[in-house]
Image 1: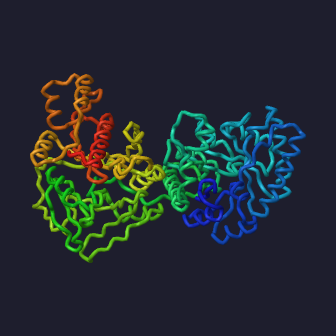
Image 2: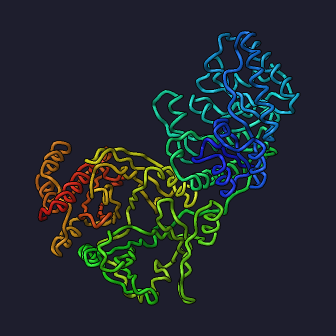
Image 3: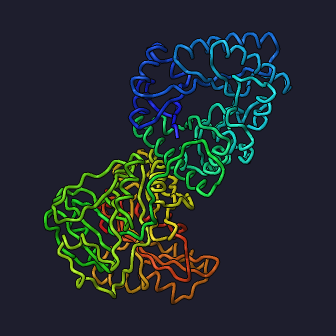
Length: 622
């Protein structure tokens, strides 16, 4: 599949955008007119630069406000268009994007639209270029791709075709089924954009909130299957207007864009696998990625080792041992849960989540898939007799490893820490990892969603928002289809006037499962665990909401337990440790098939963390 990207998607100068697109692996680019206008380089220099980088220049865009006007204005528009055709010849671009008129159209007449497009086609023929007519979702008279295609058919000119843009189609709720009715040779260009579902005017939605495929809510796979059946075999291009992209690093945005197209190509290939019709669009699948069987291990690093291992001990973990060749690493275990700790020495550095190990049926295929999706691979030094842990860097810098599935639940790498099977306690109170919450920089949030979707086959599910003392927090739930791996990705608040609190502005956490949370809490309390305090107002509110048995409410209060219940009688009990650097640990017990995350209690937790961190700043004793 030929890939392209509009220069409007990327930050920087035109020269920087071309370099980033080429380095990421795109086949071509669309030149956005403003990028050329402000460039100090001539069209001939841009053309040569693209050729040197191995890029084709696929589209010049946009040409606006052309059809539906009086003859006097139309003659002026033709003159303006001819100047752009001459410019395209200098650039070596053979297709221009013509948007349906938004501002200057005064005559609503399809016959007139078609006649004016036909005259434009005659002019285009003289310059050996083509016109791709696109229905803007907010076009004055033409805002529907089927309407635009009817006008193209009426124009009946070899130099006039249509441009399909998924945002303009799907933002209006149009069905994409009719795409299959368009002859492939009359589709001159295809632009893709995804977007979250928002309730706002379409123009603002389009200009600020488009995202790459797989990062929003549009069904682009369905669109691509319809497109493939038309016989279209031209470029598949990205046209994304997004405030974050305009400020983000140009190289990583380009990589994220190509990753999205490779993921979409793979999904489309699978969607068409059973289709018996001929498909001209060249599609290639990625190496298969199997659902992860679970979390193999978690890795954290700290400059506060004593504080960190004390909390693990209070929760019932035992030291498994130190790594035989990397003495600054140790592993703590409880039941099937393994937490590797990297000791940074007595530096006081915050305790942070640095790595996730997924139990993967085929680590080699997962690594190959990561490479094809442009994920940076981890160069891990090891001795000859040590496990070859393959992995890639997530957008936030977290190391994601692909570990082998262990039939007996005992991975071979544990031997490097001196841990033996007989060391594993089968009746541990902690029974697994319920979920992992990772805080994401706001500018990489959508990129992270696509990373875990495309690389690990996780699915984006519910997105929640809730208030905190430092602003609104947004959570994206990600999980594997088998529910063995569950991640919560949270937007970390932007830097602001929050002082040192921003070191732990939205702390990450590990949620451990148990079938007896009261026993875990009592054991932890006896060992001196500092629970995150829960205010009395919370328990009074619980009683008002759920009419709990007074003895049960006292049990919750006594053990700093929070509580939630769903409409089907499922229950969720959980408690939090105090924050360790930028992370904390949660212990949860699910009863009766409860499937939520305790999100209704998140504001209580965030407010308590805010207070405790503020008190620490001010020297208030715990």
